[in-house]
Amino acid sequence: MDLEVLKHSARWLEDGHRALLVTVVKTWGSSPRPEGAMLAVRDDGHVMGSVSGGCIEDDLIDRVRQRGIEQTKPEAVKYGISAEEAHRFGLPCGGTIQLVLEPLTAASGIAELCAAVESGKLVARTLDMATGAAHLEPAQATDGVLFDEARLLTIHGPRYRMLVIGAGQLSRYLCSIAVGLDYQVTVCDPRVEYTDEWDVPGTTIVRTMPDDTVMDMKLDERCAVIALTHDPKLDDLALMEALKTPAFYVGALGSRRNNAARRERLKEFDLSDAELARLHGPVGIYIGSRTPPEIAVSILAEVTAAKNGVSLPELLQVEGAKAAREIAGTGEVCGV
Image (cartoon, rainbow, N blue to C red; front, side, top):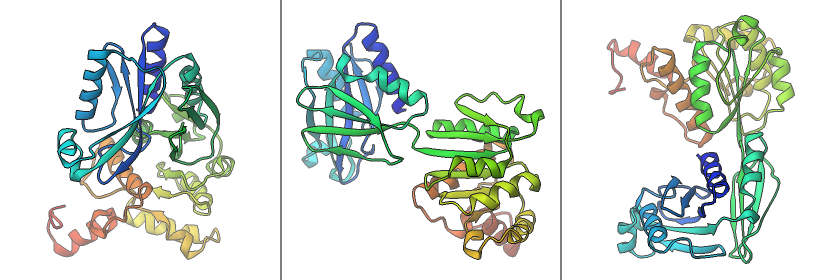
């Protein structure tokens, strides 16, 4: 979404329009959008992106349509300071949101920022509130928005990476959704009969062996690894290396029986009990999924929970839910 906001902003400037870039820099209480969320408003009221549930957008659009983009320098504004304003602007629980309104110019460097992000770079953009000029520099793999009234620093680019083992049908659905979730997706499959037909936009395909790929990628705590081939010769190679890394999620497709056998095999690769305990398998949450698109949603729901630090109850996990069904002898588990 952020990239689309930036790309539209750059295009509007190129076409001779004025544009206002709006960035969430701080929130208090509940807020519909996180810090760093962006909205672009064109001088005729067209918009791209979101900074709230809609009411703040409406106010900003009305302001631009009534008065145009008058300002020449960035300014900070707050919405929802009072309970009445919080209700008016759709901020729940009396929340407050602070925004930076930035009139874009050539000095904003939006086209350069778009080019850097589209090439897969992680970039820090620092905006000078006094002049409106911005400069770019390489960033570390970290989230964060820093605003001290004098400058605004934002991070742009693929902050999370995902390695998918296998280029089969399920991988196509999973990777398409993962790209939309802002992952930098790499698909590893040495089998040419699969890779020759791979054409999912926004992903990178590699034909190296999975263990080599894991080591080459130097996985960190912002990485997820998902093995989907059903072939132990490929999946196990990736898992035995991935479980030794700080990756926040490592999972493998397969039945409960296959995953139990996989864990036994992985013990032969000198993995510790703590490392083996990190393996998610059967992968995904239990939603009764049967088709590849449904299985992809199930897997990415579990990945998202892990990414956000949410511990899922056992009944939502595939193994726990199916075991409970067998014990109960029915087709439902507490409504799941």
